[in-house]
Every structure is written in C-alpha cells, then in structure tokens.
Length: 227
Image (tube, rainbow, N blue to C red; front, side, top):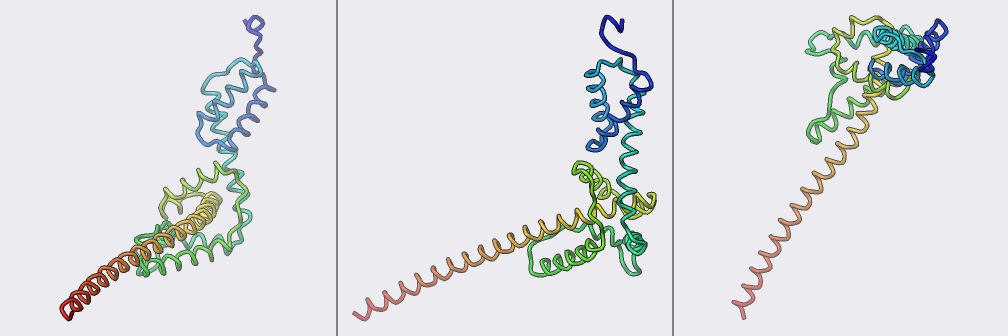
C-alpha cells in the first residue's frame, strides 16, 4: 500500500522532524488545531503516513508548552530581584483599599471631564514608571496578543497562583501593552475633550448670534419709532 500510494512510514527520524515542525508552528500559533493543521500539511507534502490523531495532539501540546516555557523563562531572566518583588506587590491589596494595584492597571477612561482627564494622566504616569523598569519582550506579535488576553482575564489571586516565571512574564507583557493602550486612550480622550469644547463653543456662538439679532431688531424698532 505504501509503495502504491508513494508514502513512507513515520520512523524515529520522521518523528524528530515532526516535532521540529510543531515547535516552529507553535512560535506563532496558540490553538492546538492550528498547530496540528500545519503538521498535517507538512506530513502530506513530504509524503509521510499520517500517525494517530492522539499522537499529533500530544506533539502539538508539548510544542506549545515548550514555546511558552521558552518565552516565560527568557523574559523572567531579564528581571532583577527588586523588579520581581515589585510585580508581586502589584497583586496585593493595600490596607484600606478595595482593589489590588493589578486590578487598577485595567482601568479604562470614562467621560472626558477635566477631573477624569487629570486622573487618567496620573494613571499613565504610574504605568510609565512601571514600564521604565521592565524589559521589552522579544516575542512574536500573535503570541504577545494571546499572552496579553490571558493576563487580562486573570485577577490578582489567579495571577498569584501561577509559577513565578509565568507570573512575572505575563505581568511584564500586560503592563507594557496596557501602557501602550493607555496612550491611545489618552489621545482619544483628548480628542473627545476638544470636541466637547468645540461643541460648547459653537453653541455659545449661536446663542450670541441670536442675542445680537434680537438686540438689532430692538434697536431698529426704536429707530423707527423715533423717526
């Protein structure tokens, strides 16, 4: 059958090659079916006999976990002990506070009032002070996006239960991405604030013009009576 179909059995060398394919696919893909689809395409392209699905699923899962471990370890090694303590401190709730600093990092801008603008600028400065102490992750964009969503979905208690390397890496990725998002939000807040000022100015101009028209009509009426 193999000779007739021009396929070959997946031997030890083939399994080693397939694991390399899975590792490369896991660099930019997070969902297991996506990694398995890449493996299937490569197997068909190189005329290999397809192994059992459980084998493909196991190799894909191992590749994904291996890539995650590489990213988390590399990023965690760039942190100083003081920075790691700072990250752990974000997950604790200070005395008298209702929420932890980690929860406050997820803040989003509200209505563009003067008070809210000043408060949000202070929030940006706090994030900036944190970002200046953190390394820049060298991770593919699809993975960064997935890690950011994963960190955002967790509360402080869930983050604290993670392994130290994963906890620190996810915190670094989320804080940096959140800082970039706050800059975009600040620009949007500034634009909305200017639009609000412009709308108020236009309304005051219309009120002034109406007042001038009424005053002009009154003066014309008085001049007519005098004549």
